[in-house]
Length: 574
Ligand code: ADP
Ligand code: MG
Image 1 (cartoon, helix red, strand yellow):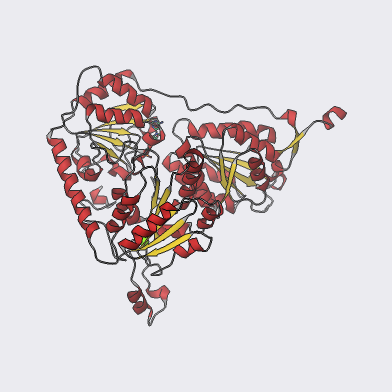
Image 2: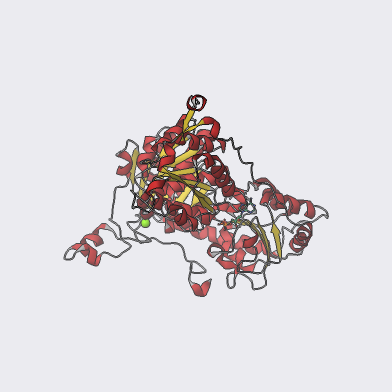
């Protein structure tokens, strides 16, 4: 059949790349190899950006951050078997965070299945636990449909991770162009609104509150609800508390932000409105003694199954946060009302904020060397550009940093998140830097890492240098996980004994020169021990808009947080 033979042909790789392009995929992160290299090349030829990383886990973290920042999934492209398995960490993290993500994994040729093929693994099955949707298209012709479904599933309802498996024989297959059906770009998620009666009830519960509190979660950030929530806060003069990644939906320096009195606000509020924040460990499950036993929760969430978890809510508002907040505004507007700014509740919160702020200022002003966390973060905060992305991970580094480093814009903080994942920092920073470059050139990314956290994906510094992303990495170095030892103690300890038998499990090599990881690839490296050195290196790094830098900040190896009212994570104090 001459007509058929002469018809234009297209490779499987191109069909896959075109399907991604049609779905508005802008960025692919991954590591190529058999059988996915051709897919990456085909994607670049269509104008999709391909960022080659050094470990699939970091690639997957980067792709997931794209989803959170842009509302359309980033793609993580990996090879079969171990490549895919390395990406599972990123998928789990995305799914637990409710962030859209699309992972595309190569797999062995279909005719070698179950034969012990190179890197063979039950990939679709393996991904099921980490995703909302995991599938292998039955043919190359089915690819555009399956990719559309995966993208749609990742952003509709509660966002999450999706997986599409691509057998090796698809990639180089030549098929007739006419056999590939066009599939349209999937629409943005439909907006759902809460029941009118529930909105009325919620408004009256809020108006009758004596000690109200709004909690702003990363769901609100993802939903782009900043304008409506800020209006709600200001119009009714309501105190609000952001969760770690909810920071910036309403600026941290807003007069109604009670972040500095977090424990107090949670403990004594009588009505709490949750905007896209789950009552999980981050919010102490919504239970006493961290909350009043009879606190009324008003839960706003897009996921019906979330409503009622751990606590029976007074009102549930199922729907999109932005739409529901507008409904609430409209309902509250019907009768003139605002929460009295001179209430006892405001007084309690303000007093607590003042004393907490004074306590951390006191710690920050200490002049002893090595520096403590507070001193470091106060100096960093002084120079941080207001519009920068702050990426952060590490135990104390992240927790203390969060209280000092301010966010003024929504979706500008990325951290270990709901899953408490260490190793996300560099991948997130790379994603944020790509987004900044394309959408708001000049905007900086500051990645604040503990020395242990940095180790999980330190080789991505090469990726940062290869793509010339002007990220500023701060490694807050205490020689260990939680805490470490100084050089003298270290030497003393190893005098007569073998390291593996005596070095405490949390210790890392003291005085490590992490900044040399950056200089190895052509970026700028600084080793700093004093506030003056820190200020100077930070000034230089910010002034250099073309180059990445790493500032290795030596701190007191035994430094900790200031005394807390409640111990973190202990069961008796839930
Ligand atoms: P945080 O860690 O900030 O407390 P969580 O990840 O626990 O936040 O909660 C985010 C919540 O936001 C999830 O329950 C998710 O279902 C919800 N969510 C995500 N997008 C939307 C949206 N557009 N509208 C409403 N809720 C959303
Ligand atoms: Mg450390």
